[in-house]
Image 1 (tube, rainbow, N blue to C red):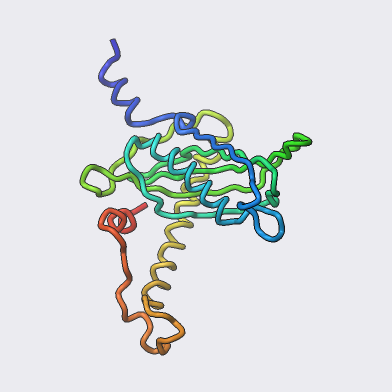
Image 2: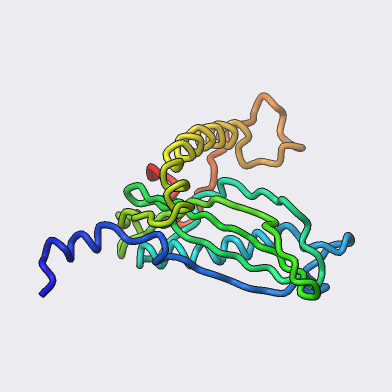
Length: 206
């Protein structure tokens, strides 16, 4: 029989590989711009989609995207290429999870593959009351997973600083159209926080 301590440990942490999610797609003409390469927004939608699944698998709870921390486009993705996105949870802290996404492009005619984009995103898990809920820790196993796990606290600190700056800009700019509001009156309007569940996630520490 499995001991209670072992059961508790299995819930407290989960392998990073348990959240691994892979999404494949082919780039069609409607997906591309006038340069014949995929729209950045289209690829970002793919990234958010696969990252959401990975975060949900780790938390086994509903999640919301708290932040798209970075999206680096390294190589163009052309019409007719295949894109393969892989995502997994690299690190967690209380109610939040960091997810890493790698986008690999393949020329289906030659078989040549290259990493065309990488991204980090942060998600917050929600409980039955639509408030942030605690998530399991992450157990890294591979060299790649350990590298991302060990460097995650540095990225968390960078997110904290950037989030403070974003709040400052949001408060200063307000909600009115900047073209119509005199500079002296900006920042007086209250910012819209969306639904209560999203507001709770945004206001929590992650």
